[in-house]
Image (cartoon, rainbow, N blue to C red):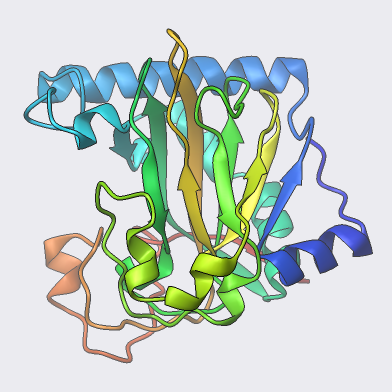
Length: 264
């Protein structure tokens, strides 16, 4: 795993809100990630008796991606991969924080000829607000412009607010809330299998259409800086835990959001 970061990479991440790291996983590591993710997704879909995460496979969103959350809770190898402190250290170093907790992992499989994902921000949907929230997006297949790689509006994390921007079928729906961003040039982030993209939870990003007859697989994990506090939204928190919280409480439950790295 390529975990060494240069000063230039850190600066690039903080300036633009995202960073592509090619060859982050070696060939053997990639094979483990691919097998574990495929197994975990297959098990999850079998348990829900559906081929996608949508009830109606013919809807627009059913053809955007199959999304499976918190696979680390149901698959032992996925648990081992997600809890790797090396991932937490890279994320924490880029974000400039002293500790990293897992918010949630999720597999995102864009189907053949799948629909695009509109521009959106991540962090406003979560149960905490932080300008230092960060995610890793691991390419399990080559992510290309043809099959739906990620696209970013660079620097938008510096101006974004915590108001939720609905993800709708219009690729540029976010511009209703941020009309000034319409003048920005989107930047593609293609990455070969085994490479990753780290991005800030407030940077505007989208995923293109898959114009190939093959699925485009990715495994992701969203991270929460240690010390983050509850904002009142449930999101992925269990009902039992959610009902114990008051706005302002520190989100430090090890079962819900485990700490995987702390700066020495």
